[in-house]
Amino acid sequence: MALQSLDRLAAFDAFQYLDTVSPRPILLIVGSKADTIYFSEDAYKRAKEPKELYVIEGATHVDLYDKPEFVPQVVDKLTEFFNKNV
Image (tube, rainbow, N blue to C red):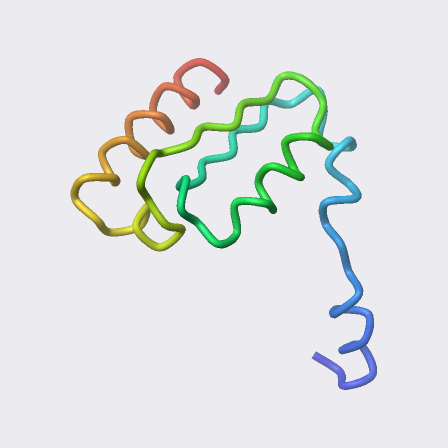
C-alpha cells in the first residue's frame, strides 16, 4: 500500500455501495451484545431486499467465531441461507 493512499483507505465507506449488491440476497449475522451491532443494523437499513438481519441473543462479535454455544447457530443459519440462495 502506498503511503499516499492511506487517507483514501481511511475515508472509504463500503456501506454506501450496499444498494449495488441488490437484488442479491444479503445475510447479516450479529451477536446481540456485539459492540459493532450498529454496523449491521445500519447495513440492514441501507440494503435492498432480499435481506435478513439474524441476531444471536447473548453473543458478542467474537463469540460467534469460537464459542460452542453460538457457533452451531451461525453454521445452521449460513447453511440455510446458502441452500436457499446459491
